[in-house]
Length: 363
Ligand SMILES: Cc1ncc(C[n+]2csc(CCOP(=O)(O)OP(=O)(O)O)c2C)c(N)n1
Ligand SMILES: [Mg+2]
Image (tube, rainbow, N blue to C red):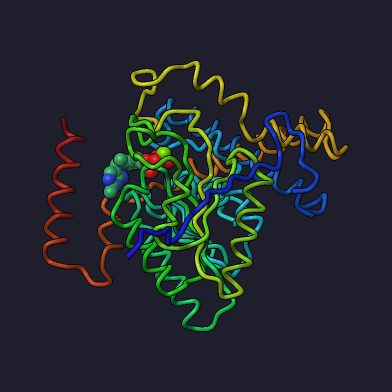
């Protein structure tokens, strides 16, 4: 038997807007001015809320959270490409997309104050959006299953599932991609490669030259996109959704971006990374370049920017006020959400937890 090449693979990368906001006209998607402005507004809303949450956390007014600053383009552009019946399955860096899908800001604040009630979304919003996932990679099999279910039921719906770069080293990631590929489920997997998994840099976390190539193992189309380029993200997710709807099965997208802030507010990146790297990536951040693009198209100017920021500040003010006026839920409420009926072991854990809370309060 001679040796022969059975298959060869290539990895494509896509950028539509360069770092200065110059567009590649041949690749520019046909979006209406209103849609472009919606995208910019969506990213700006996430930025404004994230920045306020950082201040609130530092003032002890909310709990721990992971800022999405610098990563707004990926999920916001994906949400623009999605239809209301599509499933939005996020990890914890998709604030832009969640807000675009209609999550009220006050819910975000409740959730990040440790109140599970933040996950109780208005029915039309929560109907096709899973709660934010903290367990790294665990959402990937859920996405495969929901995609399979949509196909099995003959629904005209697809799934977009986000995960980090670190998540691609989890078993759940591979099981989910395998299942989705075997069943040709309509799922678009999007890995936000923000270069870090807490303090572990991407090159120490996986040996693969690109994350995109991880889709090749499952024989699904894969693509690397500039994750700070909202137009490239929109094009990539739109193409993948169209393929999924046409019966073409899942796609794996690596969106290359950068986590500009700390992993969560409990982390200090100065302990493990160089600030010059952060500064380089601030120059490439997604809002700046999209704004340049809009200005170039005469769709935006400084006055509009000021008006938008004032409006968003007021929107966040209102949400913070509603959040702080809400009665705090009892700390043991999450025990009620685990099973439909209380389990004896869980009831015991609840008693132990309450005793611990009391001990802390009395100390
Ligand atoms: C299964 C599991 N292991 C460990 C953790 C602790 N943890 C939380 S986030 C994180 C890193 C995730 O990195 P990545 O997937 O790149 O996402 P990013 O935080 O960079 O968005 C880890 C290890 C967890 N939440 N779940
Ligand atoms: Mg990461």
